[in-house]
Length: 78
Image 1 (cartoon, rainbow, N blue to C red):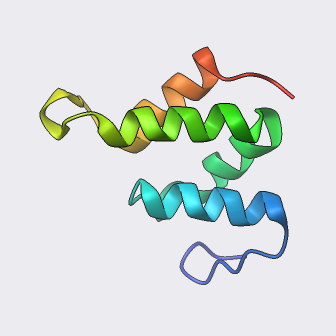
Image 2 (cartoon, one colour):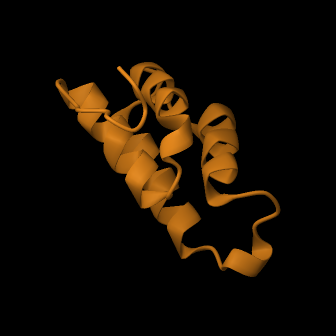
């Protein structure tokens, strides 16, 4: 699967795709897929909501990087 032509085929892939689109970060679709496989859907969606609400001026690198950091440090493992 290539990033540009990514076609979700499973629920996990669909959630990873939705995260990447929401965070405008398709270049890291496979990072989101690994997070989806490791953390609960509820915790990832909660973190996504928090990241999307954060003003852009308060984000150092990108919202995608912030999401990944929070998921790894605050996410609930499966």
